[in-house]
Image 1 (tube, helix red, strand yellow):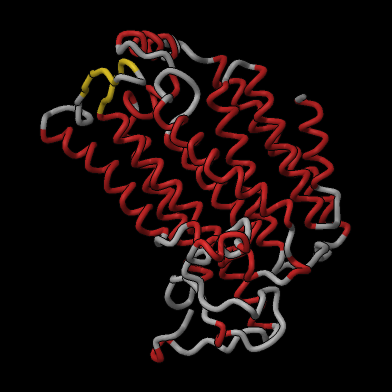
Image 2 (cartoon, one colour; image 1 turned 135 degrees about the horizontal axis):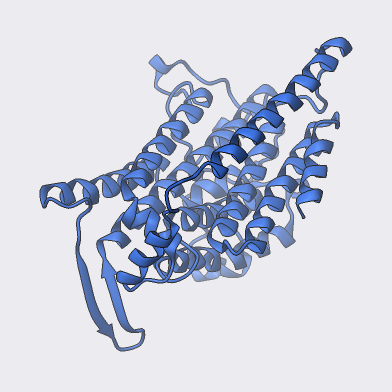
Length: 369
């Protein structure tokens, strides 16, 4: 598996088409995830699979605004010099890592982490480290993730960030979107319209040649199960692979499925709230759990509650679940923000360049989108 991953990485450097490079780079990521599985790290493998899947979709969305092939701007002799330098740098880093690992004198901290996890009556060491033992690190990483998402999407949005429904009057020419549907307010109302409803709320906004009935049906059937799976991964993290980060990625994948099947109108129908609401609320929840713990003189707000539900049985709810839920909302907001910026917003730019949309007004006019 390691050899195949290295081969895919080498081929990624030789291809001339951007799409092939993205696919090969994705294979290296999936190969690393399989290596995690072989080495007995299911938490890391699950996270790597989800991250790689979302990254592949984002790369493909960006490729729509880039040339099909890479432009050759480096001469042959410069390439001949850079390759040995790159190999030397890689060898140097490898030797430094090997020497540093061999020079360890203290006992590894892994055994202590396992003991702490068992003392808290938990089973998943990775989740316990992320949301309990090293939760401050997770809080800092969450803040960095939110800042990075804001920076990336700000490069796309020049004016306001709302991407709601669009009225029929905004369409001025041929486009991928059907001219038979005005601004969306949901699926058709009334029992008499039920037999004519499409599988997706905004499916009828797509022109027939751009629709895939199979994809629409699969998106409709899989959307809610994927969301349920994300909630399950959120609450089972302390005893099996999961957690707020990977659960947020899975929930984001559900929204990506709706976007790929029905376009940006469908994404607006599936997630009518602004991504900043999810991101801000998630960061506020994580910070609140951490800061309330400082007031009590502890690292995090230490609070647990045990009870019994008639159908589900005994349950154990702690403050770490609230912290993980904050991470879940933050990651979901980040994924939604990126998909809206690199998906829906670029859709509008492409249509405007093709003359299908009316030119955007200036910010002073209040209609810049």
